[in-house]
Image (cartoon, rainbow, N blue to C red; front, side):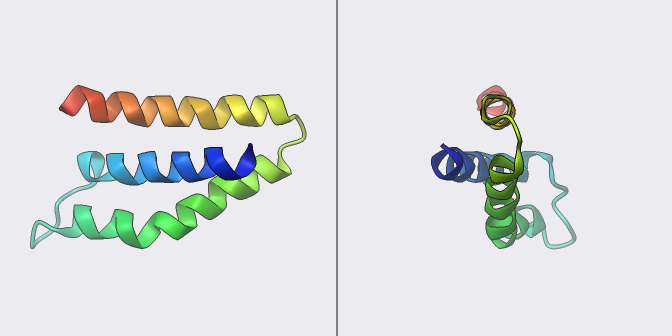
Length: 77
């Protein structure tokens, strides 16, 4: 489950980042940074899932991240 959950977590985190990142001078920094950071987000989630000694705990942590970001997106729209 490391691959699919890491991908879903990275996509949901990328989708929620414009809601909590500052806009910047031109007002688009909060849109550019999530796109540029997507590969790093995916790598961090994937490596965490692989390194975690207890797979059930790793699945729970990544699922909690997904749910927290999804709740943030839902609360804004």
